[in-house]
Length: 279
Ligand SMILES: [Zn+2]
Image (cartoon, rainbow, N blue to C red; front, side, top):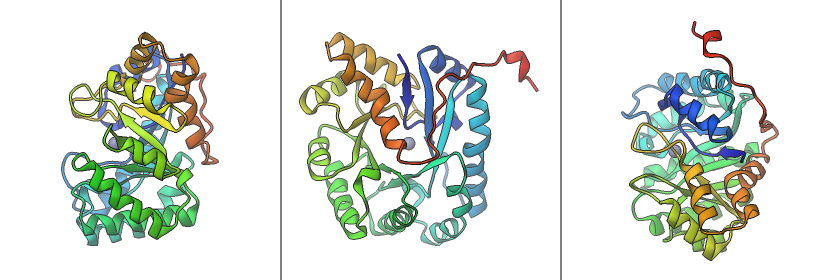
């Protein structure tokens, strides 16, 4: 089975993860920019990181047979530092123009406050001007309140919601996200926090899979780069149709990112012999 991982932070993963992902059928992925474990103090640190995920990480993934794209943005977890938001957004164009950049993201809310709203709306405006897809991060706490506030932001900016991938929904928000927006709606599977494959399976049983994408969203925390493989196994066990599973782990992500002209995933990259790149 061919899988697209639509939201994963490979920057914090090892080569073992790439090997396991390839072996399990993951052939393309998108890495949204995010927090690095400590708040950055300089705009230059953001720019170097954007370049790393757009260039080095893409080369590294390709060695293991995976076509890697990235999304760049000022992430919500650091977005209370408004002067730094302004400085980074003043210099972000070169990275948004990069051939491997397929979206702006992830952007959204963490603590759900006015400073984060400023960064969120400014970047929605940039996405609207550029007609680029956006990866949106719903807060991990008070999700219904966060969604409520986001819906007002989306209205205020007047952005085309079909270009938005609204990630980190749970049972608390998925119904509203599907019925009150045109967004592609994301579910995130984590080993401990967030959703389990069983909960994803139950959500799909209730809501269908026409506008839902699943991601593993793996980073340096307790997370799993093979989360989607476990979703596939659980969904098969629960007797979902093959077409439903394909939408969730391949077709919907392919359709969503296909709204960027740069998204042309190459699904047949042959992994290199590690001896060829040990330099
Ligand atoms: Zn993320």
